[in-house]
Image 1 (tube, one colour):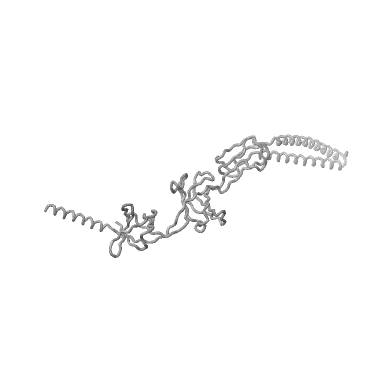
Image 2 (tube, helix red, strand yellow):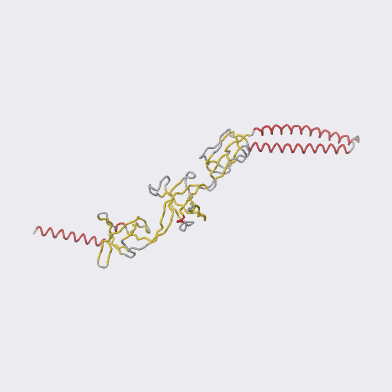
Length: 335
């Protein structure tokens, strides 16, 4: 009697548990949805503009004031070029100006004397005209000599090589003491905004579109370590020419950070769209390594073995992709 009463109690408890489980179950209708397939590729950091700071005169580099990686502003002195001939030319110009000043004083004295004699009637007008012409010639020669000296002084000032734009110094291919010709680069400066350049296989040419959103991976991560999203960007330009089976595209990223020029980083880009089926993760049960979902069939619940894919979000709800085993419209029992 006691044994029968115990069996009855266990049966009632099991029935209550089953009723409670049935009451908590819900149905989920499987619907096919189109998702964008992402692919992680490497993008190379580049600068929009890289401008050289060029020497404006020929000579010897006396001083280099910048190093690789240094930030410079437009107009900063990058290096100083010295030409010893300029100092000699300045001394020659000063001597010429001094000689012309002496000639001008003599011409002024001759002109004044001729004007005084003309006033007293002791000289002809032609002598005054000659003295005036001589004075004007020397005056013009002096003005030309002063202008020539200004040109030499400007050449001396151009010995300072200035940064043509604000940016970061990439390379400094010269050292102090080396000889340089006018027009040769003293430094290369990355002055434009940084962007990412992608080189994609030709098969993705039809899927890449300008304006598409992309994800930028965490700096220093590789494909083997898994993609970790750090920033977002967009495809700004897709180049119309395919080179060696590769499509070139540019990605703009706001506040990309202090990357090195030509540094590579992972970029997850949309390359295709596909139709997939998904169910809530709690609808899946794993028994002996095989995944099952319960389908509400016409003749009652039926456990169906499925092959699962990746987890994703659908309208903010977690879903797991079902590769095989289900069809669009199946009703799934979700505990």
